[in-house]
Image (cartoon, rainbow, N blue to C red; front, side, top):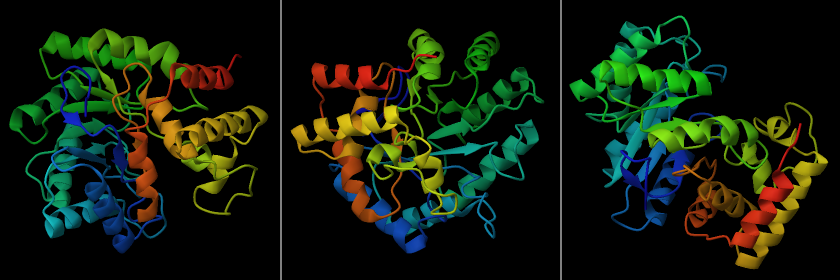
Length: 317
């Protein structure tokens, strides 16, 4: 198990992403994925599921609360033990704001849909520069003080705003974020490593990276560019099919073969080994994909493996 930062809970070192629930995975498939994840992790080890009130509001015909509803229905049906739920506010198509009254209403809605008494980790999904950091800090601190959220985290804030939030929370003597959620993987490194990791190291914040597999590219699924509309994720993933991107996948495949591991598991293991990373967030659209994700949590790459992947993925402007 790993601890999220210096002040967070201990969890299994892979967080299951809930962004696909109600999108590329319907209710039966989502239940199967959740069942497979809980069953694959040793009994007694807490698992974390990451979702948001906005998943999946980008899909025509969806209202944006599908993922939370499905997870809540699964919790009610299965009564699983040692499950931590993280969810977010500020990213719904109709509610991309952090107005304090909206945040208060948002967490009440999430609690109802998830069927839990408290959110284990409540994220500000996106920054809202129309709401002062003083107000943001105060309302998220209020949620923790009330017991509606146990801990808070920030997602998609710039490094400057992340540092400013921490400074404001310290000034107010309010709850500090235990975690930060950045876009971070082998084909998207520099911003996080140059500007976020130093802040995380200084303040004991754990990183839970999203797009850990670059929308499937780092699973070796897309070796060439495809036309938009080929699948919900293919066009976005295949943009990484550059000479360097393909060289990264080739090395992941070679190293993975040496360990009896998949390309995806190897990519996640590299990410897990990076400074301040507590656990990558990765999603599966089918239950049979879960085994690869779980395998990454126990895959130990050698110093030489990590050096090779660092070298092939280094990007210089």
